[in-house]
Length: 270
Image (cartoon, rainbow, N blue to C red; front, side):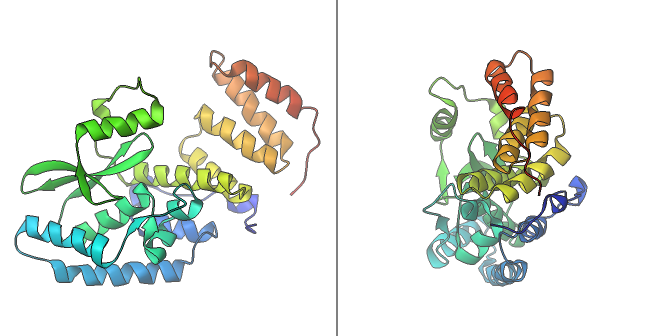
């Protein structure tokens, strides 16, 4: 288990000062997920090597980048796709395996070195890249490097939200670094919960709540994490906040039962 303490879980970040991959690597190192020096050196090596693919023609330059990234370097989806390692940018850089978000970040930043405009697009549960090459728009799946259709994108949305989920035009709007980093933190948090690394999951949750203090679902999720750590007072406080702020939520009765059960448990001091 990580030795991170609750006192270490609040990182003050200025959204306007977020840079990728630097900020993501610094957070990962502070959370104890990856080695900052190793990850940084892996990035510097890639950022320097990619410049050899700077061809005059933009389309040829883009094709050369994709071939180098996926074929020569072997970047690909991690087998344990929902693990914290897949969601961690440091591990992605050193192992050349990741999920759609970490692979998108690496490819997007390498494309930036070649003056190729790629922008992140956040579908529910999946990250894509919007490509503007020779004044033509296309969407790229960072898991494969292949262009995808609107039908394929809608299938991804339905796979995440259900067969009746509509495809909203807002899904195709590119996002900034702060939204992208927020998704990375959510995915790292989810990976930590799956692997029962609850202290690191708590750190991710606290950072997200620094940015989104009124997000009732984050409070409910932190209540679950806090309960696993024996922090009953914090868990009860978060559930009470959820009940107060979301009285008409479909899960409200279940949350009330959870709160009553928590009030009968003993606190574990860390």
